[in-house]
Length: 131
Image (cartoon, rainbow, N blue to C red; front, side):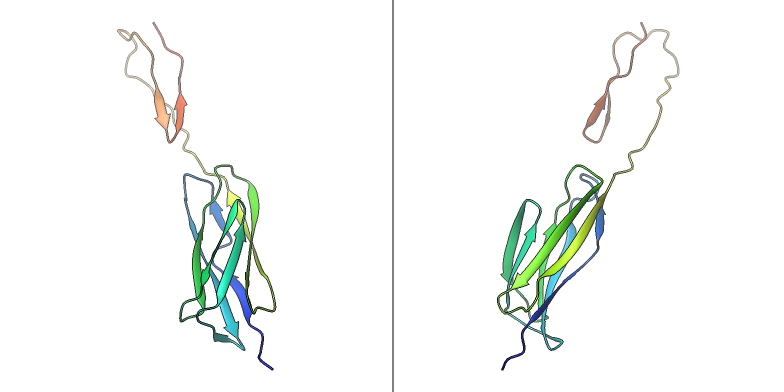
């Protein structure tokens, strides 16, 4: 009787929300009695979709997890293969992005007329103006 395959998810368990860290490299590893299994069909389920493919000669199927824009999220990733005896699960923690806090101080407002627009990433700030 053949020994069933086993699958495990490998890689970091956390990242930051977009746009700070856009992807997290993960891998599903398939083994048989501890030895890597090449060409195993793997399916991975993630929040918002899934991906499938086959393992390489080292028994690994590499894929990327893209975090959401919101932070403070915990998401689950699961993987299985055709002859696997188990389903592998991994929790990904999406931490907030630490946005810099800064203050702009003009050298003088004496002759300034108009408005000031400041862009930090994809956020626009419209501070008050002096006239």
